[in-house]
Amino acid sequence: MEAFQELYVAELQEARSFESMLLETLPKLAAAASDERLATAFREHAEETREQLDSVEAILLKLGADPKEHKDQSMQRLVQESGKMADLVEAGPVRDAALIASAQRIEHYEIAVYGTLAAYAKHLGYAEENQILRGILEQEKDTDELLSELAEGVINPAAVEAEV
View 1: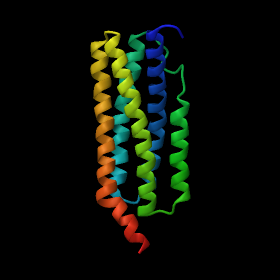
View 2: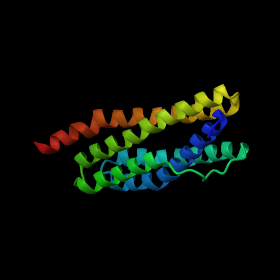
View 3: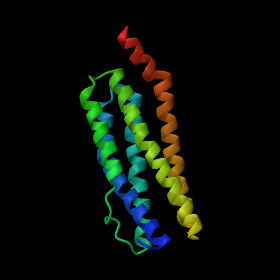
View 4: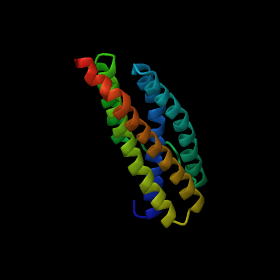
């Protein structure tokens, strides 16, 4: 890879890869959640993830790139860890707290990637793509905020209370 454009395309391909992984993972997180609000948050984010995947694939196709060329190994590991936590912790508020922690690691990774992609698009003069990527970035930030609210207001207090 020598050109900035090539880096941008490779990063987009990685984003497409992780959105595809998350489409499989989010329903599993929803099924593992005991708190219905948390399960609903995972299901709703899966719907957003489908739209995000479609948007990233459309950008790649517009650029003439193969959407499936790269596989994001970092996200693959984060997804594996989320499944491991769901298996290690008994169902209930403590597992829900672990699911939120895993999901927020994933969200923070996505926030970093989409912030970078939007900046790349801006510098390459792709105004429309920049706007799309900034929209996805805002969705990821909103999901992270919702998870924090659920953790701090509901899940973590319930997890502490379950130990008493």
